[in-house]
Image 1 (tube, helix red, strand yellow):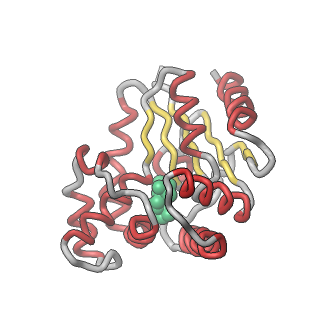
Image 2: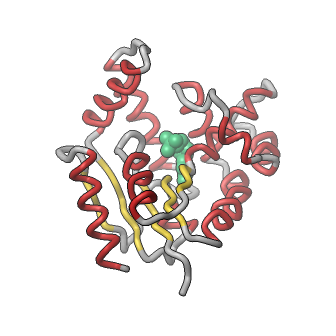
Length: 208
Ligand code: C5P
């Protein structure tokens, strides 16, 4: 039988990452945070002094991506967020990253979280989750994360950035953010990490 692939999609700061890590541990699967791929491509483009919307430069950066790039310390924060979202709208960049993601799961299966895992990368995944929360709740969580790191941020600005990125990810012509028809929706607005995990775990267990 094919190795188990768990596809988790949803908007920024909905709790996908935490959920993906916990599911990976529970089912003994490798985990790939696919946002890191786009973040690392964005950073490579910025390193070259180029514009992340430049399709030629961004495609070359995507093709040259290595595992080490994913461990860069500068992949978080508003600059990396915006660069990731910009390169992610370029079809040639997305194409260049498909095989990396499929290969990652080929041997042992995997939990992958992102925006298009259930729709484009693994349309036949046996388990697809779409994790959301209201923009206000996601902004609140992002603000807490930033504060925990000692970074002061303006709540209105954090909310505005989340809304911008949602709009960019939902409205792009290629691989727009949306649930696969067969995805199970988990709205975490009123769920803590534990409750979200319990729900997701039940969905996976049911399909094993
Ligand atoms: O999930 P994360 O916030 O790290 O993703 C950063 C950006 O990368 C997203 O705003 C989105 O534009 C892009 N992305 C994507 N497809 C994925 C993962 C991330 O387009 N599978």
